[in-house]
Image 1 (tube, rainbow, N blue to C red):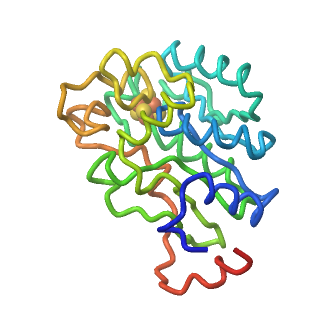
Image 2: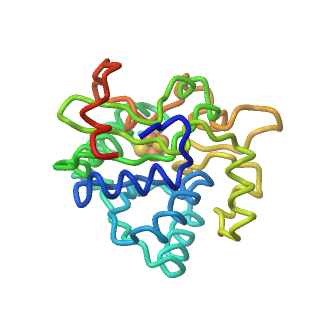
Length: 233
Ligand code: SF4
């Protein structure tokens, strides 16, 4: 399959056929994620969609998640930290997101994500190259150690294409997008941004951090020979 010349729906259809049932998608219910959720709901709504419940989400995110499940009947599976909030506060501080956001993200996001992708052969994400400098080099298909393939069907899409899709297909979107939040994560670590800033500029402001770690903990296999993955496509 020629990934670079294929559209996101085509890529998703291929991936679901190739890797089912060992395939899942992750989302935080942002605009790009909604494009893929809409497509997945039409291709195979049984596919696991991973949501990391950090305990620090905006109420709007949790309400929107329920709305999406009701509208599309998709299979959202939630993962949480293995320790309680009280233990987290004791371990780091009463404000873990301010005092040690890397450790807070590790406990609430990275470790649960590692559990969520255990046993999978393919992981679909809604990352796009134009979202931030940290994502400009992503590829549609990436191979990682442990025989895991990560698929970014929207890697080459722009923010404009995402919004065109949502409007055209009348897909609901997170209410905070209309209040200046192009990217929405945990409430203590997300701010509205000024016009012209990159999409993730409101995340961990002042902390020198643009990623929580779930998209960076895996070790990439550097290969140009992807015939093993392309076989059958
Ligand atoms: S985004 Fe903030 S609150 Fe959420 S897990 Fe990371 S540091 Fe903690």
